[in-house]
Image 1 (cartoon, one colour):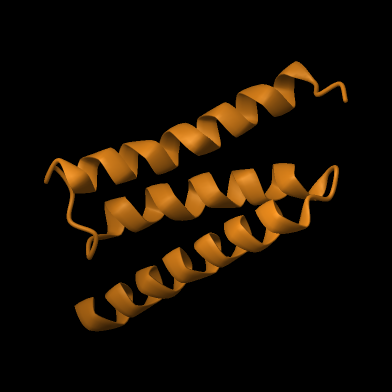
Image 2 (cartoon, rainbow, N blue to C red):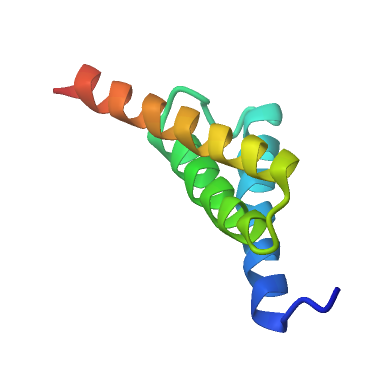
Length: 83
């Protein structure tokens, strides 16, 4: 399977965003109830979900789409609390 350089870079960026959020949370630099953490997770997982659709990889699609939906749900909930 030959994956283009652009797709490789996109998947690297997506993974990096998720890992920055994870490390930030584990090292107490970020609060998982704050927008920054959830934005990093939502964007990173959305990029990886897009990559997982072509070629279709069911396990990764389920993982990344679920991760994106949960992160977006938390962001919406945070916004409602702030209003």
